[in-house]
Amino acid sequence: MLTPPSDLVESVPIKLALVIPNYNHSAAIAHTLAELARFNLPCYLIDDGSNDETHYLLQTLAQTYPWVTLLQHPYNRGKGAAVMTGLRRAYRDGFSHALQVDADGQHNLADIPAMIARAQAKPDALISGKPEYDESVPKGRFYGRYLTHFWVWVETLSFDIQDSMCGFRVYPLAATERLLCQQALTERMDFDIEILVKLYWQGVEILFQPTKVIYPEGGVSHFQGVADNVRITKLHTKLFFGMLKRLPWLLKRKPQRQAAQTSDGSSDLKSTSAPHWSGMKERGSYWGIKLLVESYRFGGHWLCRAIMYPVICYFFLTGRVTREASLDFLRRVQKLEPQHPKLNQPVGWRDSLNHFLAFGNAAVDRIDAWCDRIQLSQVDFPDRQVLVDQLESGKGAVLLVSHLGNLELCRAISIHQRKVKVNVMVLTSHAENFNKVLKQLNPDSTLNLIQVTELNPATSMLLQQKIEDGELVVIAGDRTSSNTQGRVVYAPFMGQDAAFPQGPFILAGLLDCPVFLMFCLREQGRYRVHLEHFAETLKGPRAGRMDRLQQAVNRYSERLEYFARREPLQWFNFFDFWHTDSELKRTSSHLVQPNSVQTTSESSQIPEQDHKTDRTSHS
Image (tube, rainbow, N blue to C red; front, side):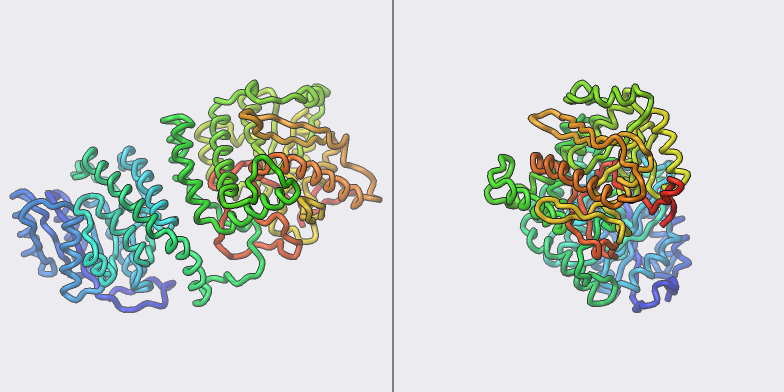
């Protein structure tokens, strides 16, 4: 019996066999079996109607290795059929699990002990390899598989299946046999996708083990570009409608799993307070955003939007926390604006869905701006001259912004035109994936981003120098961070006091320069920038400091509410904005918000400052 890694201390014995489908893979199979010999595991080798040369080779190898049982199809039926033949024979022979290995030498067999250890720790789960590719992977197949991943995420309403096409898997045979007795599965290349989704539908947990995958030089692939892609397309159509039939169960599955994890002590979801936004895990993955951007390059923003809409609908269906936060905000607006023209009477799920779709449309507009397809001339900016006059004076300014509207669009255009130097305070932990992709679209996309984690006396002096050089410093003032207890200011917002961070207003005072408010909202099909003079400076004597801070936050909150009531669907804070100070804490929950394409102009909480030296210091 193989020994599992020490971190998997709770394990149960499993009875495991190998299953290897083979169709005309004569070059690599001998080496594959030689490598597998050291594991001393029974093996079912399935000859799926191979040619005479491969047929005789497999017979010879089965005679050479007594632990190999050769099963033969009289004609080629397909990879799926071969795998099912091996799995069902292993189950009839009394095995509890089967490890599928492809015959073409792509899989890293050194990862087998780790796969077995995962299966021993979770015997009811299916363990799948999660490929890590090298430069040998064909680019067409590499990018194409992410389209399949997207549809699998839709079909399961989850990101649990991280890769649906890897043929390196440990199957729990009892659950697999139940599925095969109930349903006839496809027998070709689309089998790997279908069985994974349908086992997930049956409640089988899917776990992943990272593994390196190579494409050997001269290797044979039986993937038929046109025919197999047509099969996969038909399969996804069938699975999509199958998902619709199971929609209520799939929506309930995640809360049930979270409750089960809580009961066995694996996670703590019993906290009475909702998770703070900065503690929420970013939804989506780098490759999901990469697929979105690649679709933009290939088909423009119309194709990008066509892909974006089902993604946003998925987030809407599965994001209970964010959906409830959206409805709460929109209902607050309607209470203050009973006849609001952009909201239904009363506010319902359609308004919340429109709210999510507005977020998606704003994300595509950001990509448009970074690709230089939205020019400054296409944005209405009636008070532009006010900012121009300020910069021509030789001294910069602070722009207090928010997560209302699409200010990212203005920053992208400004960087493209190289006329204004913009420095943005960011919390990149919630924007890493989007920033990484933007940098590929435009190498200058992160040129003037200043991370909050770098905020120290040196950063403060750097910002002061940028102001003196006539540059802009942009700070979002509408988001607290998870460690701001005691460093927030409460101000009326939408009929209830909300916590605002002290940091942006303190930093603006330290920089001792003019401060402006800026909002960029989509109105009547065009973006319009609203610029307002906020203060000539927020600096002042130590006496009365807290009063000045309260007044500044009150005014900011008042103007933020004014514009948010005008354009409520452009409010992109999808969390409980009215957390109290005692609730501002990071939780260990993996509840998430739909910020898979998050703006880079995140808020920052400035550490406590030393007013005697006008420098920030660590809290």
